[in-house]
Length: 431
Ligand SMILES: Cc1ncc(COP(=O)(O)O)c(C=O)c1O
Image (tube, rainbow, N blue to C red):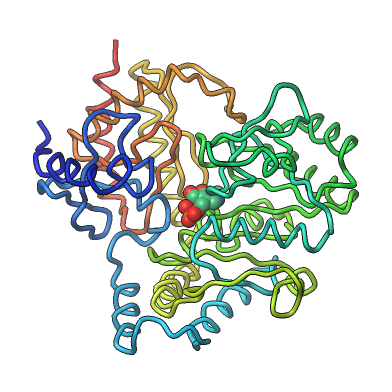
């Protein structure tokens, strides 16, 4: 049995300090059993908790750690930068360096603005889209998460092309009245919505690789269709690449599918494990942002030197030739082995994958491309599997709707070890 005594004690203290004992809800282990594990250290693909259990980690801090934990280059660049202080509220050469690295290697953006989180990137990008077009409405898709921006914490109402209703208390109805919520991968729904509201729509926002409600891989033709219909109707296409950016290719899903968005948001990997987000677009669109234009957006710690240093070190490594091919190859190797084992044992389990992202699915199903195609009953299977995975030294995000990530630290040797542990876990699902 996993030792959990210290984590349990720490969680009791945390519950007195923070709502639900955590500073971000999914960490609370509400969808699985037991208290959350308090992590004290990470190195490469491993993490250790306060009870000294060691795990092969596939959560990777929810995506940022594409080089694994405590990467030497990232750590050394942070340490070097720290010698000179932590923040100045004035421009630094490090912002130029990270900005240049990104723009030189990303054909989709000409200017970028650094912020401090994915949520902030999306919130600013939406304001930019509204400021640029002079329109108010935005279209989002059910099953895509864009951070906790008021106007995007919405779920679909009944019927197609309906205004969203808030999915969180504390958001006035008026804030979501301008948000239209549509099903993913459904061209007809988009056409109908644009027929009704097209002239008022500032942007269509989508996670081109939806990875926050399962991994809902879209048909490329759907994303191409969004590009075309947006252009025809002078609507901006906003790719939220907070997860997919620097993950499936350096220039994200836009490069992976070769589709040009008008505005892109980034987060996670761009900060090397420190708090960074960003949004970018053409010179023309970005000229709307203050101090050049009249769309206001600012941040005391935006472009923070220590965070920039971490980002520079990490993003530079991602530019190594063959980086993404290698990431994808190792991920495929892992996924294929586990899927083959499940098939051979007649276990209704499959890992779905793209790039170095994977998602655990249960039961018999075809392609899952929309949120409503996920059977909520399978979350009980996830809950069981999560517990057995922990017992076998494998850590993944504690929710069946979340995806797993593979880093450069997950060597073939470690993936083989992880597969052997996974097989043992799968055996508990065999009939
Ligand atoms: C696609 C997407 N957009 C936005 C966000 C919000 O980013 P953050 O948690 O850094 O605010 C996330 C976070 O997971 C995300 O996955």
